[in-house]
Image (tube, rainbow, N blue to C red; front, side, top):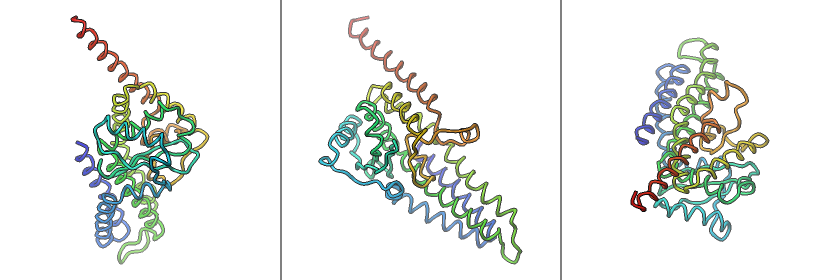
Length: 291
């Protein structure tokens, strides 16, 4: 299912690039958009992890450099029966984390210096389990490809505005250029948002089952949201869907186009998982007693 979602996302985002190319340069521009989409798709498939890590200036660390963090990732990977990803630290006081990579054998987990300072060990473990769930489900490929192509769409839209929507043998069309500038990035955001919210719910639930401690992740989300009120992680906005916590929605419009569910909804989802785990444990106890 995730592979089909990835292919659908690639096709939709690529289509937006082709449409913008046609708007700027007619059939020739459409062909250029098609070529650019192909290059971006192939490039993001193989180099998405490097692009995301570079966007946030993440640095690789070893077991000796970050023993507690490294041990957590190692233990969670063993419990999930998946290859251990590379471990990175982002030199930023903002509290956040993300995972990237095209598959579990080519993946990385990155956390900021800030998140390691504000989260207690059990909550940090919940965050790491969330990111490992993205890797296990191959969400990281979808995230990074979407971010890369969406970034390209925004860039091409700006070029369309700069050149005034000029077509072959025609004058400039500033109205078309303005529509390209504003509508193309919105279209890319909506496409990203289409799968992003359900993916975050699924990763939260998987992390809760992996650690068997849904409340720790719920507490971490509360703490991260409070921290984001005062300090957000910089970098290319196109890569924000990779983060475990986006900046807070300041109005109805920004919340409508958020790639993440609200923290309140995510916590409610975790409470349902907590009840599910509790019921399962109680049933196991009753069965062991012969009831």
